[in-house]
Amino acid sequence: MGNTQCGESAESVKKKYLTAFPRSCMIAEVTAMDKILEQALLYDFYGELLTTHQKEVYEQFIVDDLSLGEIAQSEGISRQGVHDLVRRCQRALEGYEEKLHLVERFLAVKEKVGEIDRMLEEWEEKKQEPEKIIKEIRGISARIIEEL
Image (spheres, one colour):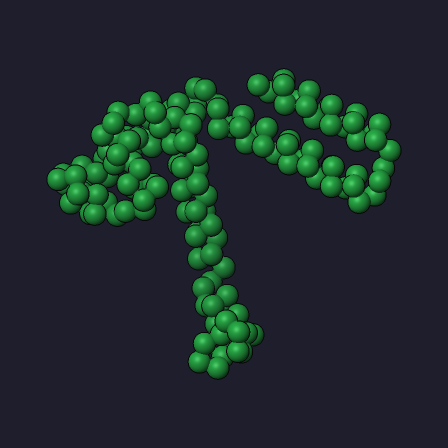
């Protein structure tokens, strides 16, 4: 019976798990995941600007996915202290991004590189004239350089 358990059909498992939560619940989960990914990106770019203690606590919260209580216990501070420290780190990282826009630029370049990749795949499939694809790629690369 493949990946299903207790004799359940794949269709009943799909209905059970994919329709068990209201759509608004799934949207909230995606939004929460986007926020976590955003914080992780900000940390990747600006984490070295935090103090050693801030980095340790923030990593435990964002990277290791520990709860505030778990971090408080391991660091010997209150849960509220951990919460305040994490919030300060988030505000600092967001402030760096507001001033420097490194994550924004990175994501813009990543999108354009993806566009180039899609164009090349399409060219491979359709075997278009190379001059057209070269011209389009040069245009995208010029936009990338302008943004940097």
